[in-house]
Image (cartoon, rainbow, N blue to C red; front, side):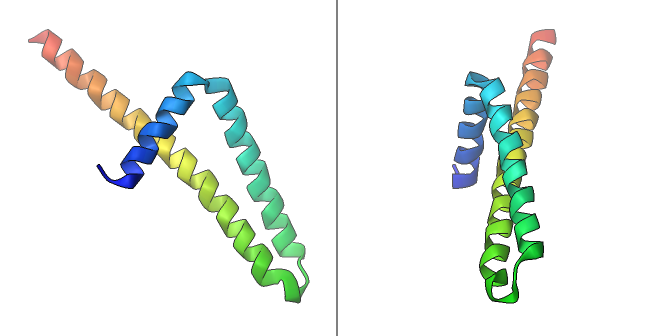
Length: 89
């Protein structure tokens, strides 16, 4: 199994075990990314590179978790469809 697949499985497991807390974490990650973006836009030239890196990292983290959730949802849907098809036979 590839590392990203393992990550997706772990994220899906975390989301199932604590859905409200997981959603709260995603909201905070998005806020953090927005804050970092604002800081980057307002940064003086000598701090721009560092703040741009932080903004990119925050956006990547948000995207990583959101994509893991979408992937996990697709897997669960596919498994449910396969299971339903087997039971219909």
